[in-house]
Length: 240
Image (cartoon, rainbow, N blue to C red; front, side):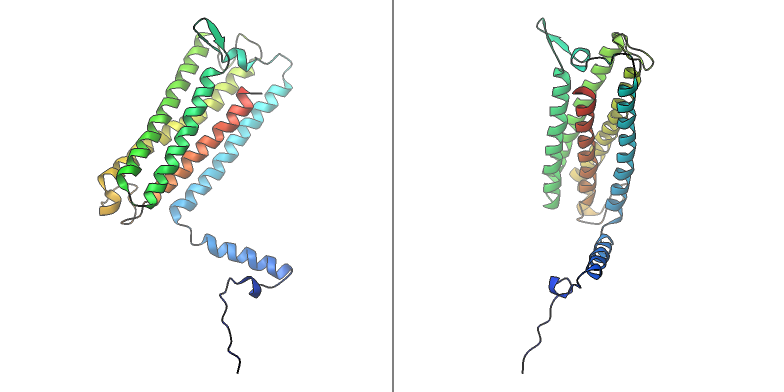
């Protein structure tokens, strides 16, 4: 007598072919998403909505730049810094980009140590990420101050198209606000991790179940999104 072999429900050999197979795959994905935590799902929904907003801003910027009849300012000249008597184009923007990308690396390591329940290294790396983020915001404030002193306003600028000023302050300001909020939450969560709130299940805001460091991963999703958006801003606004 032959013995029957039981196969798991997700065995590819048990999946129907054709359109029924497509329907089975879609339904399996739907069941998989039901296992996602509430906090992580809400963060993904927020990031999708934020992607739409940033996308609209960048599309509006490209439309304004391509439709204006007045010459658009040259970013290499506008965002140049004079160091040692030599004018270096985009040097500040390059440093800002390096700082923000580096903060994405420290955040990834913080999430990794959060999985390992190493609260001290997790908190230290989150503080390092917050410090890099604050450095980025500080350099952006310096950039804003420099351009305002040179006469850039939301309604005009001394180098050409008036839309340049409004586009610059709107896009970089909206992104800088995201970074500032991220720095604030990084400091709050890092302090809770350092105190052991997630190990002792201490009551309070953003404290999840005992031993669950998922909030660190959720914060990582937000921070990586902010870094990714800056890559697009850097490419469209400063290199184009």
